[in-house]
Image (cartoon, rainbow, N blue to C red; front, side, top):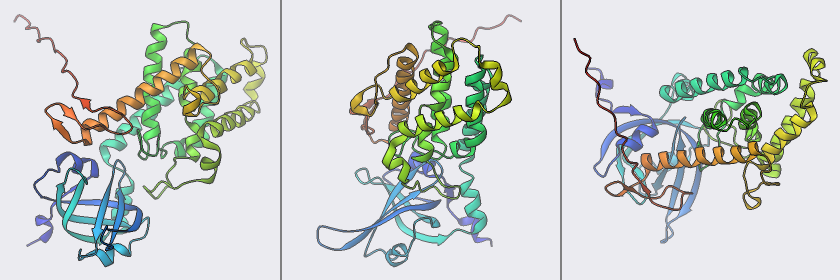
Length: 356
């Protein structure tokens, strides 16, 4: 008889979070070792904290010295790909924990499949990226359209494997694409309500506001472990974004079509300056890292669109992963500073019955 028929279901970490409860349940996960650190209990006994990640989620596996896998787990290197089969329990305080775990190294084919990402997430991110290109193609200002297209042409692959943040929101491979696409949808909707807004400038500001994160929160091609990068640590994504846009702007003006823009109004250098202001001011406050405060309608709109989408993602993750303290009340998802409440269900009008 084929033993594989008796193997537990293979889940993503996102799926595991959704189904894990206080009662042990058998599942398998395919993951990569993101970080491994050795610590000590209050009694001085060694234990390991191993951060495991896949394309959409991460968990921490605590391995104590009485665990039969302690020696094997101690030998794991950052970047290792493993299958972990266990009775999974949501302990509440310490999160999801594997009981009676078994571990093996993934084959090369399994590694490639894992790096391809969760199919549902990969499809959503592909749809988001396609929609970003459509928003760019719809721009009326040829300078901003060319600049955005040049960015996607030169840095599109890196963009697609960059996170929007290291922890707080869209903190996953490809998360920046999700964040930018949703922000563009919101920006276009707001521009429809406030027609005095320069929609092309606002959409370009959305694309470039976090572009410096390509050198701060980018994942390698073959890993879910986000490294720390010297440029990101020393300069930060706002400074890097300003530098990138200036470089792309110079490169863009080497193209033949740039000669047609010399007499355009508003003048090109003013357009560039307004775009740089959007990047510089998008955090909205000095204490949040903005070197300058929003001083134009588009800068103000961009700051709030960015904040709205980040907060909505935090609430979504709170509903998905936080402990339910009481019916409809979920434990806070950091950095939110409140317990989140289940949203009010929308009223759906009854379907009208068509006469025969």
